[in-house]
Length: 608
Image (cartoon, rainbow, N blue to C red; front, side, top):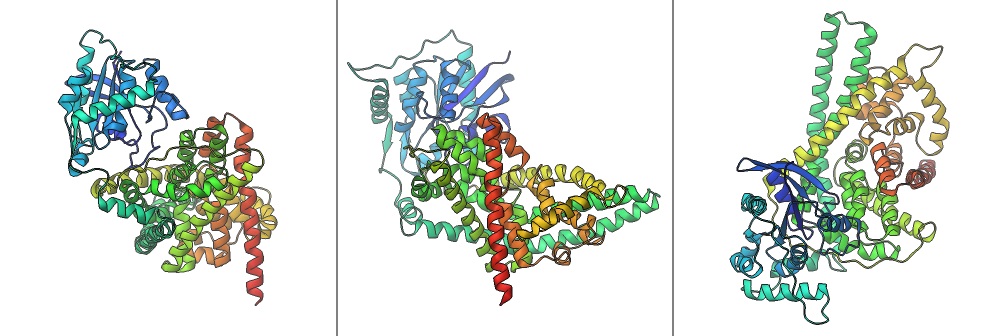
């Protein structure tokens, strides 16, 4: 069996960066706490020797208070690794050392890796790693994992311990009556006094000024709104031309493919199924999703790497506390912007089960990767694609946040009664993002991965829905019957049967809801067979869409049942189909309610 090396440390000290550098994997990293909520493992090789590296969730102590801290504590207590690398923050060694001392008192084969030495140097902090090694009697390695420095040395030091006789743990000296936590912090302070030298204390003046701006009572929320508005404005303005170019390119490619199938004398039904079902659905997904994703995700990841997301959680903490929820829920909301399933899993960072359930049940209100492209496309098509569209997108995100707070308050007064718990929120230092790596990472790990998932789901779903809409039956097709059956109820809420069927049939992935809606129109005879292949805007207007229809679609896109992946994740995290059902019914009920309000408002406006 290959040896196992565990990566331990506080949150946000660079464990995942070191893990990725050693294994070549692409685990998500970012300048904020709470990204790693489960054990992640990968294989690596140093000097021809293979081993398994395990990235353990960050924790401040082996006395756990949350799910991810319990996973970290169990990993050490049960001795699941043959050797341990404890990653320390070189800019805040006094905070990182207590955990290392606890682990060393349990496991003898321990290496200390002092990371972020490049940042420490910029702040005028010098760490004497040799003096730490001499004082503690364990190997100590300096590193700057973002640039790859020190990663191999830390791994080599851990593997070398496996070739030595079993080392005894390093006992933690205690004074009479002193508790373990007190002894750890006292010993850490003594070590730092001997080995850490600073030319100045605390964060730089620039960081303090930025924090006063971004987390202040008066300017914190307006700054958040302005930053989000800027991101959406750049996304909307930049996505218009490439989206139109992709649509024209797919239209030309579709013409060539149809000609090729005709040349090959392919059966008409097969050619139509491949082109009108598989090709048109996939083309719509790619042309609608790719341009905005290619712009939005790099911009959002830049804010993440900068260290802005914990400031958002800090600004929103008061709001969640007033709703009797935990302020950490703001971080799980940020995770939900990437993927609701990830956001649900990330709720493990919340300490109490009541607050964790509250965050899980409301996470689907946050617009995820799969919903943003359709929201961005519709805001461009029906609201101009400029400042108005950017303001609308900011309003939709603000609306989703208000609904998260409102639903949390409702749950806290009904099935999840209780008071909010106290917690510690670490504000990481601002770091200059590595722009090149951010762009590559966001394009490869987010944009292309999500696009591949969407295409993988869209192609077979497009074929199935086409067959449902065109298989010869006695009378209308199954899809047409579904659209017409749902139409009366859907129109009550400002939608129609095709839209509602698109949401129902799009349960596997939110990315395919809009293409399925177009296919519903075509199956019901609202659109000609070629309309769905044309530009998205004219096809929707031909189907009778108005700006009010688009707005209702966008609101229901925010407030409806989660996708199948998220629902399954909720079932796994809660262990209950009842909570899973509530997580689907709760947002859907409010989504229909708000769509009804919009329909009534539209009726009043049109009457004038």
